[in-house]
Image: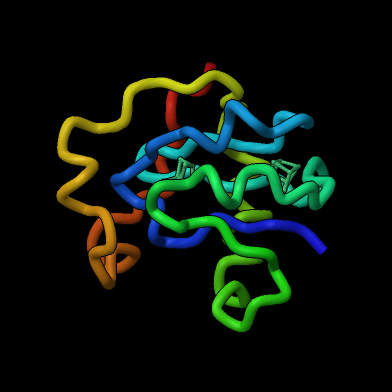
Length: 112
Ligand code: SF4
Ligand code: F3S
C-alpha cells in the first residue's frame, strides 16, 4: 500500500503534509503535490494534516485514478520537504470539484 495525493490538492498546495513525512516522499508540481510510491512507508502521518483532505490510502476506491499520476510525476517533479506559503487564492479552490480538468498542469514546481 501507499498513499496518494488527489485532485483536491490542485491550486491549494497547503504543504502541511511535507513537514510530517519521515521519508521526504512528496514531490512538487506547479499545481499540486504527489507522493513517490517508492518512498512512502504508509505511516499515515500526512493524511490528517491536509486541510483539503487531498491525501488518501491507495486502497480507497476513489484513489484508483490517482495512483498512476502520483507515480508518473513523482519521477519528474522536484522534492519538497519544507513547507512554503500556499498560493494566495488557495482557499478559493478548497473543495472545488473538477479541478483536474481545468487546473492541472504537468509543469514541475520549484521544490525545496
Ligand atoms: Fe510520507 Fe507517511 Fe504520508 Fe507516506 S504516508 S507520504 S511516508 S507521511
Ligand atoms: Fe496538497 Fe494537502 Fe499537502 S493541499 S500540498 S496534499 S497539505
